Length: 262
Image 1 (cartoon, rainbow, N blue to C red):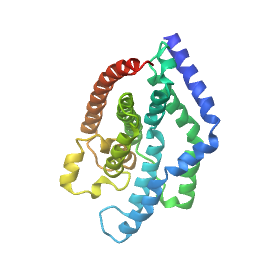
Image 2 (cartoon, rainbow, N blue to C red; image 1 turned 90 degrees about the vertical axis):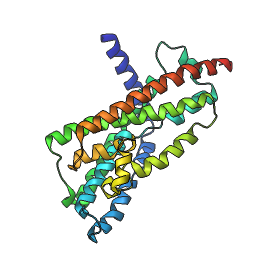
Image 3 (cartoon, rainbow, N blue to C red; image 1 turned 90 degrees about the horizontal axis):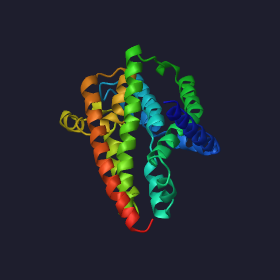
Image 4 (cartoon, one colour; image 1 turned 180 degrees about the vertical axis):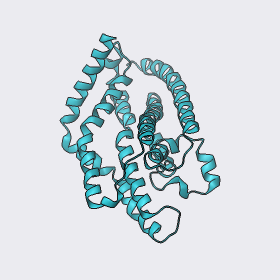
């Protein structure tokens, strides 16, 4: 147990130091993911016109919560893994007594810690400019929301890492992610709250992984009605299914990679 803790601490400290070298770039990444704040302005205008049940204040709180959740659930493993496979950089990591995926996990977790001051600064600035939107989640909403955010990151990472494994067979696995992102953009709740979708559409997408990547954690933070037990169950089922497919592709992909002389 002590050895495991030491390895985790070492991995995180190394990647955290690496991320700190790119602090200016981290700020740009935070700003580049400010789409929810832009959408907040669009939907706030619609809410003021009384076009749907949410008020402009509800919309503001929803989208700032989307921005916060997005800061903790962004994943880019497919770009790193694809480059490692194409350039042959995966080979040295296969010689190490640890699955290469943990390098990517440590990099993502460390990046969250390095990104946190910039994200917190933007959130504080938002509430200074728009103080009436400030709210505190209920204690249980905060607890369940944090758990849901961690699970959302886990699910997003598993899905994208599974797509990344197709780099063993194709040169541009990122094309799969780009297609997936179109559905993620519209069905996750990042562009608009899912409460605005027709009932038939909502009844279908609740069985897909998309709503649980953003909308579900956000709804817990802002207090929107949502079936907690069912949502967590669906998230766990998708995580389990993703892991099974991921490990199957990994075993086959490593054989393919070795067969190419790596």
